[in-house]
Image 1: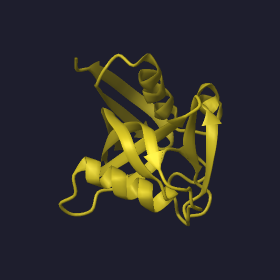
Image 2 (image 1 turned 60 degrees about the horizontal axis):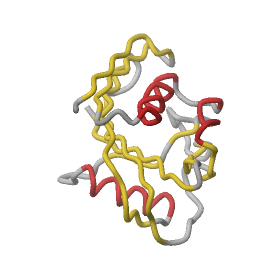
Image 3 (image 1 turned 30 degrees about the horizontal axis):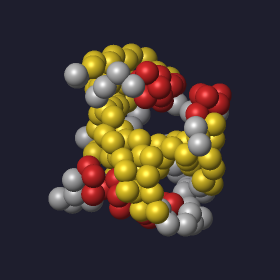
Image 4 (image 1 turned 135 degrees about the vertical axis):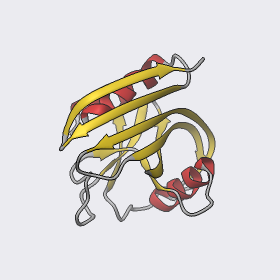
Length: 153
């Protein structure tokens, strides 16, 4: 199982989104996702988050929160544990990302973009803000076949 982070940076009721259009053989090609990536060896979730945000955006996070852990299962790709964050504070100037185009998107319009079906489920949990959660998303090919969510308050 891969360990990854994903972060939605918030500003003015918008999320910073990455439209994945630049990488070759990208399972997220043409999808809109948050900022994040794979853990390096001996890296904690917070360390991975801060490094990936800096590498992909040029920004340094100053205020962030772990919101949940998502388990992705697939008949097509390696499984993944994704640590899901939101962030409201940062410093620095945005840079161009080599994985796609960065854009601020109204939070209420994100689900209308080409995103994974499971992402809509965790966006709903972020919106409801009921506390820390774990979620399982099982895909068959590109289709969401099964899901579950548990709150941990």
